Length: 131
Length: 131
Length: 131
Image (cartoon, rainbow over all chains, first blue to last red; front, top):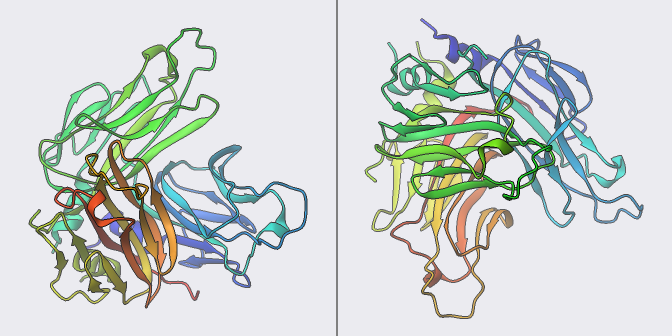
């Protein structure tokens, strides 16, 4: 006997990074999400998801772009990091729907210490509501 | 065999909005919470709850009230949104106790696109502590 | 039949405060964490953890230290509270690893109403990734 929610939580997780690790998914082809590209995935199932992660800026960066990382849901920034002085965490609790794309977007790739930066997502509850 | 926590998580969720949807509850009369009015409910059971949601301000609003939405626990604001430029998310992890009232409070009802605004709550763990 | 994640969630929780309560743990000696001192513990197991809590500043404090409380993971502040005017909540979703120390650090002990201040942690998912 395995209730629906239980099954979902145990079997639908993904994490990208820190490099050299790219997408790791549990199970390898989870039913609730699909990797789209580096740092980005698409949700296949309506649900409540926990997102977590950490971004480390490279403080030796010499370029002119402002330090900025966004966690985006489709075209909307749902979290924006602009401080460069510390380990920063991303994450929260989001209702996501089939087709939503979620990913970390860097203002400039070389501002980031990718060997210390990662994000992950876990399905915690199937949505049982109509909308 | 169904452990207590499992039972709780699967059977106690509520969500209000986006309009025209009002309160949806799973099960229809959940043991852990009770709707009080639009946007507001009362907790019936000590526990750890995930709150999630999204607020969309109406940027065509012409009134003079500052844009502001609060997520309140009883009389305390536990989260305040004041930016009007984006989809904004509310939520977090809260220990709530029997009798606590939680709700979204709008500074001005017509600042909000209620057809895109919602919040929900899920019981994730029964508190097993004395206080 | 009890899946791994389920077992973890039900059996690994800790909470410190509000005083006079100090550490309460479920079970009394949980496999995933170990209390280190007041307000601080060490994680014994890689996983995804929910952290929650509330800090109430004593607004009658007459000292000169700025109001500040940090939630720290090892030596890094992962959340900083500096406002003194309200109940404030801490918390979030963190990937923690064996040996990580997590705790609340007060700038000045007597700025805090410890009878209203607490934090807790619950293991929500075992990490099934390599790094």
